[in-house]
Image (cartoon, rainbow, N blue to C red):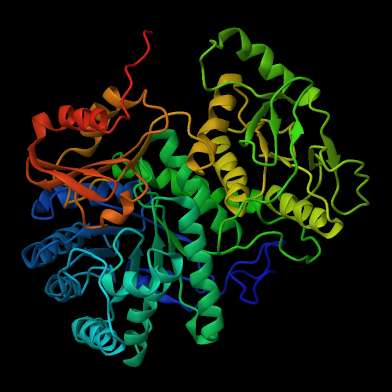
Length: 593
């Protein structure tokens, strides 16, 4: 590997990371144990007002009915936190024993109140003790140390209460809400996210409190993967007693196919590397829709990861810093487009798919095949055998039928090419078993997102081929959606949309649909739709525009992570968003149907 630190047992064979146990509630009475070799725990979050006790109870029961094992409820104020007593009492009176997690931002007093009533408290290190606006400022060494003492004073009371009452804590860092202290020293980086969490973990450990888990969430799957890998690598460096469990999630993943693909790239790839002890799929949909996706993702791990191991080789990518693998350009077909080198990552289809979709393609369509497999002269290779490569401009791929994980297979191929000093472009495939049948579209989507997305996040791949999805048009669309979700190509509007919760200041599903109806033709434009700003403006850092709840019935509009319009009546906000897009030269009129 390029660096001495290791984030998993081996990138070339599956082995689940061993962690200590974190107990949430009484396992004999409906509680759960996270880590320690126990099955991965599925969780979700309520979307309603925490003060609406009846609705909170109903939504919790709905989640439990579909298999949710941990239910998170926001507690933005002490008053909300106090109402958790009524919610929990009503649930226990109905013999519902699911552990409840209080979600805390900005309010240590709310966390202390919530810890009296619930089994677990989630805090965000970026805003638990920081009420500032997350602006960059300079710190002297003494000032920085003073800041660390201040957060210890704020966080220690919660640690002591949770230790006394047997509660668990999630130290949940968000990419968009790092404190100004962290931004000053580390910038908006994975290193900053990891250090933000470790600051709070060190405080907990000083009080001999260990019943906590970590999370490193981002709306960008590549960043999320880098952060979790770096966190685990640093925990390994700190020593065997830093083996705390990990909560996985891609925050603000969105809805529909896009939200599921982003989650598969981020969560699925890490699960296949043996990381993750509890997961949440954050969809801008009703919360019960999240649990079947969690279950299907977990079901893919044995299929995709628990296969034959391969020899240990030098890792052909830096797991903590994205860089696309260097390759030479190659033609996909005589006179056709090229892949590799500085070219875009291309989409290849089988001839059967081409014959079905080509009659429907219009001249200006962005979603179109860019190569036909049978015409690409792809060299299939078994990385375990000698590789007879005559030209570095030859497109290569892993041979079908090998009894190995496709993720491991393509890492192995890239590592062998590196050993040989070859820079051949690589065609990625979502499956090495093209004859497999009976895969549902939902499973095919998650497998493609996990396999192709994981490799793209590693920097491997110059063209992709989707074969698990049997529908011709669906497989072509899926290929482009995976490329967009992985940040490799942009062929349509990209949305960062958070799931709803009790902090949300408007109906996220309705508003998201309204914004999409006006803007979904804007190729290459990225729009963030957020019910509030607790996860921080940094989650919108790579979005062009943001639509954010500022107060009940009022919307703030952002350009990047800078608010430019405030307190717009909700009825006018979508129109003003469109005007803002026009002002910044990103608007184009939709083409006639």
